[in-house]
Image (cartoon, rainbow, N blue to C red):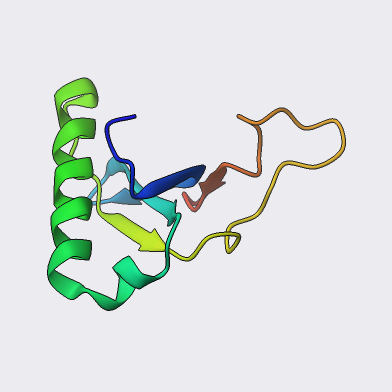
Length: 91
């Protein structure tokens, strides 16, 4: 794993800004202590954003959040289903 500080759960927030679709990420950390270290937290967020940009061409804002703070897939939802994506675009 490239980012050992982070857990497996994340959330993609899709939005629309200036007539362009955008996305940001919320990623759970394994140890909440990282959230108290502003410099380390900033560095991990920046490195993750750069890694995503190399794959997608887009630079998301990456927000690190405490473990178990994001919704989990439940019931028949797959792990890539609605629990992982929040679409804020106006329909």
